[in-house]
Length: 550
Image 1 (cartoon, one colour):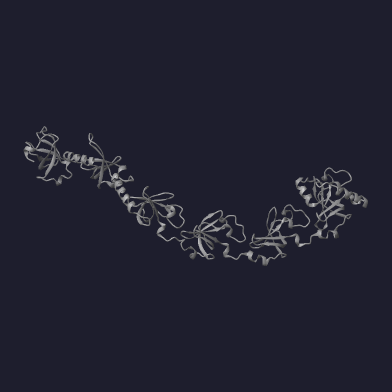
Image 2 (cartoon, rainbow, N blue to C red):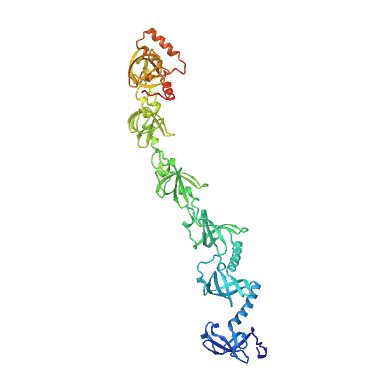
C-alpha cells in the first residue's frame, strides 16, 4: 500500500513495520508523520517479536498527549476476524477455535475473537469434566451473534449431531440383517442396552443377550464397553435397529434331542425355585423343569424349597423334550427305583403288616410300612361293631399296630389296610352270642338324650332307649344312669341287617309275655325315634350334642 493510499483515521486498519521492541510497548512505523505504539501485552510472546516484522494494526487515536499514534494489534485482528465470522455465520459454515478457559456455564473459545461455548453445546452428552477441553482446538458452528455487544455463541454439539445424522443415514442405507457391527454400550436399562454403532443407536434386548438366564443386563454389560453385535432387524422409517449378542453363538436348542435324549441322566444347577417345581440349568440357555411331583416317589413334598436350594448342583433324568417351546421335563425320583413297582409283590391283599402310626386325619390313620410307603387305615376299618367318629378315639400317633392289607392302588399310590380284618366280624355269628330274652351285663359307655350305650362282650354295644330304663317316666337319662355304671338288661331286639341290639333295663325281671309287649312297643317307634340301630344312634348323638352327665 502506498503512503498516499493509506487512510490515517481512527478505526482504520493499516500495515506497519516494527522499529523498536520495549518491555511495555512495541513501536511501529505506519508511514505517518509520527510513530505508533502497541502495548506489549497484545503479543502472545514478546520474545518472538523482532524489529522489521510487518503487522496489521488498528488506529485507535492519531495523536495522544505525547504526540504518538495509539495502535492496537488485537483490535485489528478482532475487526478482521469479526468480518470473517459474520460471513461464515451468514453462510452457515464452521470455524476452528482453541479453547482458552473454563468459565461459568461453559468454555471460552478463541476463534480470532473470544466466543462462548455453553456446556450443553460441547457434546451430545454434556461432559462432567470441562477442564479436559482447555488447550484443544475444535471446529465449531456459530449459532448466535450479538453485533452491538460483540457476543458470539458457538456449538460443537450441532456439528457432531449433523455428522452423526449423516453417518446414521449412511448406516441405515447400507446395513442389512445378519451384519456384525462394532458398537459401544451407551446406556443400560432393565429391559436391555442401547448400543452406539458410531452414528446410530440400536437396542440390544435382554432376551437377545444370552441363550442363558439373565436377571439384569448389567450382569454381562457395562457402559462404555465395546462389543460386536448382530443386526437382527432394521426399521428404516422409524430409524430403529434391533441387535443381538447371543446370535453370534449357535442356538443350544438346535440339537437338543441328541444332547439330552429322553431317559438320560444329566447334571445341572438349580437356578430358580417356584411353588410348582424347580428350574435346573443344564448349560447356558438350556433349562429343564423338575415338577414338584417328580421329586419323590413316596413323600408328599409341598414345595420344592423344602428339599432343594437355589445354586445347588443336582442330578436328574430327562423325561421329555419340546424343542418348539424350548422346554425340558426332568425328574429326580427316577434316579431311584419306584418302591410302588414292588409294592403289589411285597404286600399282596391279605398280608399281615406291622408299623407305627405316623399321622392321624379325620378320615383315618397312616401306618408306616417301610421308608416311603404308608398304609391307610380308614376310620370304617378300625372296628366291626363300633361307630368311630375319629381315629384318635382308639389310636394315637406313635402306636405300634398290626393290620391287614386290603387293596393296593398303584396308579394313585395308595395302600388300604384294616385293623378290624384281623378278627372275625362278630355279627356273622351273633346268634351264637345273643338271643332275644337273654339277660346280659355291661357298663354304660355313653349317654345321649335318647338313651344309653352299654358295652357288651365281643366288642358289641347295645342301646337302652330312654323308654327302656325305668317303669317311671325318665326326662333326662343322666338323672338315672352314669357312664361306667354296671347294669343288667334284657336283650329285646336283634337286627342283623342293621347290626343293632336293643336292650331294656326295666325288662330285666319281665315275664316272656311282658317281653313280647315291650318288643312290640319298640317295633312301633316312628323311624325318627327308632334309635336302636347303633349307627343311627351315634349320628343322632352328634346332632343332639350329647348331654354330659353331671
